[in-house]
Image (cartoon, rainbow, N blue to C red; front, top):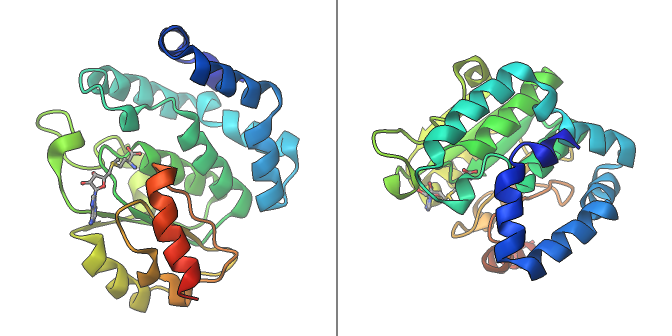
Length: 225
Ligand SMILES: C[S@@+](CC[C@H](N)C(=O)[O-])C[C@H]1O[C@@H](n2cnc3c(N)ncnc32)[C@H](O)[C@@H]1O
């Protein structure tokens, strides 16, 4: 549970400003709702999933780097750039549990999710993360490149593709070995999942930012099977 206390001050501020939402979050935490769901979809033990979720917070080199990045990100006020968000730890735990060979990510921005997934691949000692980013600087602090949060020592397993995912995904789909139950296709909102879907298997999990908007694309992907 170390991760929960990393930005205690900010979490308390959010509880005060969004008490209804905070109550739901607390309920999820005390009932281990996320951990039980992840255990179910990855066929891993709940206790192991809990260990995975806390792992980045117990990786000193990574944690030191994230602390430094957070100081810079604090100036941007973008929710998606929350380096301590549980959603990135959920992605981390999925990668640790499923040990995918290939992950495809669309939309990198600062690279908070990318950094966590790459740490998971590093711990797994296997796998590659393909990240596609169109290069929009809206989400970035001044003077920073997309993915700047990813530390140099994690870039060995990273293939960064600069461009529009709508063009790059179909090319990548032709080049990559087919994604199967050990593969993981991480597709974000605003990009049609269908581009990669024909080569994927339903056992390939997708995590999405902004679930309500993404639901449309996920549904489209299922319908296209
Ligand atoms: C919400 S941010 C992603 C946040 C990131 N996953 C993180 O954890 O910090 C969305 C990103 O998607 C990128 N994007 C939007 N449309 C895109 C497209 N068609 N192809 C590639 N990237 C795209 C934007 O430039 C932006 O950087």
